[in-house]
Image (cartoon, one colour):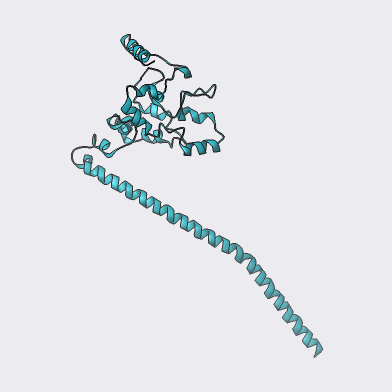
Length: 241
């Protein structure tokens, strides 16, 4: 099988075309890539892409919504909307490089945006496309695949490849921004905790107010009855005297 894969790859390269895969059966799986790309395979294995289907958080939310097929478009590889079947679980090599032996290298933000968009994609593509990085021609892979890492994690030194020199492009500024970002996250956490505390206090006040209302009516009624009793006794006493 391995020799067949190598032979087809060499043949398609020599003839100047790529194998176009259209069916689920055309997907070979990440293990086929591992033979030659072991480093990338290991990096991918530690990434969220490889766990896109098996991740417990996804499974729980997917089940809560009735396991809709639409989710599988991004959380599996080679999904066939007409049948609901798919080739492999998770976002594998062929999700980005094409099925079979095409090995397409597409670094356009639109490829990432095909999944990282909308409500479930946390609007990442929309936010990126409106930012200065996009306007400057920076792609998602420029930062998320620093040194061609397939973990898709951003490291501070990836920023330093562009943000060099003095002043605003210095590495020290990048470090300062990271520190500020951490402080901002702490402040957000603190504000959220204080907000929740205020909500809890308001809830307690509302519960007490709910009790005070009926008690007020009861007290007023009791005072009215006492007043009537006093008047009645007074009138009775005058009538007997």
